[in-house]
Length: 283
Image (tube, rainbow, N blue to C red):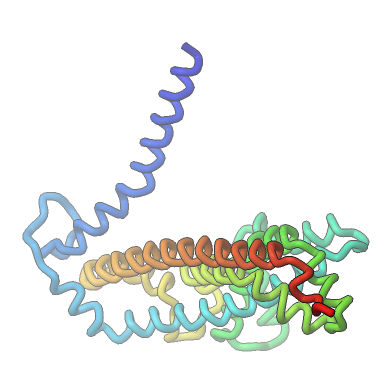
């Protein structure tokens, strides 16, 4: 009886969770094709004009492009810093390892609004103008913990004997990292980049405080346009495209990650099956 109740409770929770997560997205898709400008039921007809008008809206497309560029740059920086941080934390002898991990993961628990206010005060103290570079800096800070949480476990799971063997055979530390460690980290690096990209692309608080005049990011433009009845249908239409692309990226990245890991594991097993006497010349 207890096991049945547990299963029913789990399935009930799962169904409610999926409904809470996906019903708003379904409603968004429905109103993207509504002929009326007000997202209310009943629908006033079917139309695709909002997609055409959205891509003719230069402010909207510029905000999308701006967010994409910022997200790419911040993701590259965060992933690169995540690699260096993971290598440092994976060292055998590291003092204050726990304190270092806590410091690197601190942006996960600090509210973004507090970080945004702090960055704003810092820019004013240094007499620096609001800029997209400041947004990139803030997004790199908030994306770094996600990169570290993806890269570090993968790095710890690698067989250290591979690097040690390369070093014994005369390879330098850089060559061992470039030829052995880095290729094995590729699936984790891809996942890290995509997670950081999503985090940066969707971030609102930091971008809202730091964006220069007349150059908002997509979330900032979305928030401002949601209060305008004229632009709301266009924003909804673009939102559906962003959701579809996000799902495609997640599916492709997850499939690519699993394919890459299987391929690397296959190469490792094949290398382990090679007999050592094949490399010994016959006298």
